[in-house]
Image (cartoon, rainbow, N blue to C red):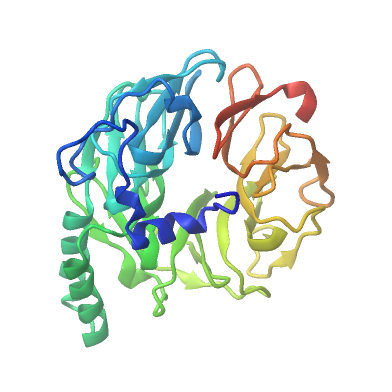
Length: 354
């Protein structure tokens, strides 16, 4: 498992491992993990965690088998919260201290209105497939055939990222080009797949809002951009064809897409041109974040932390105290950097980073 990366979210789901047994070894009823609440465990803070975000002063982390954790002491201790599903959760996003979303395998979308203490399910792969099928009815034969296959496959496609704001509404992306939008807090959904020029159905791993633009980053070197609030997307030409697992703001106006084998490219000032960044690593980059001081951090499959203070002109390699893959990170209210991955959550003192 030392090679586990964001790409493997898709591979795990498609191989059926997303329905692995829950935390307890006790015999469980044969219920779909999409409908089975995650079991409580004293070891929940040590399981595979995939993402962590700030919700006001609180931290919220998600991970395998539906695990959801919150911390009110900057990541020093964690409380497991009740989750309505046992599928792997792949990402979490908070638009405010109270309102947040989590996405995961089986097309699951979860919602909280109390800072991550309680969660409800707003979408699953069965309903998702019907939304895609409805949108395909006005398209060509190939799109309709692909949508019907999605319905026949059942709820096995993972969602990988989620974002919400007042203008866009709620947007989720995932495997095989999935992209859906809700304007009413998940009560109803529309497919945006026809808006994205993605005939190959490449996985979409991440989305980023940068100013007025919305970026999607995916496999095979794909980055798409919308300048009209998601009504249309253009495929951007990049000099690299490896997968991008994420995208992040760099400074006030630049965007970085990052992914396989230490590759990261930057678009300056909203330009359509992209250039390679020179990084002191060849390890796959899984996640990134903007720190409060304006610097940008990237984290790798080899447990490395990279920091730039000059908008990508140079990067320093930091000692995160781990060699395990880092899948997510966030800056706690006290300045500490909290990392999550194969071994749960760990803290890195601000003095090490800054």
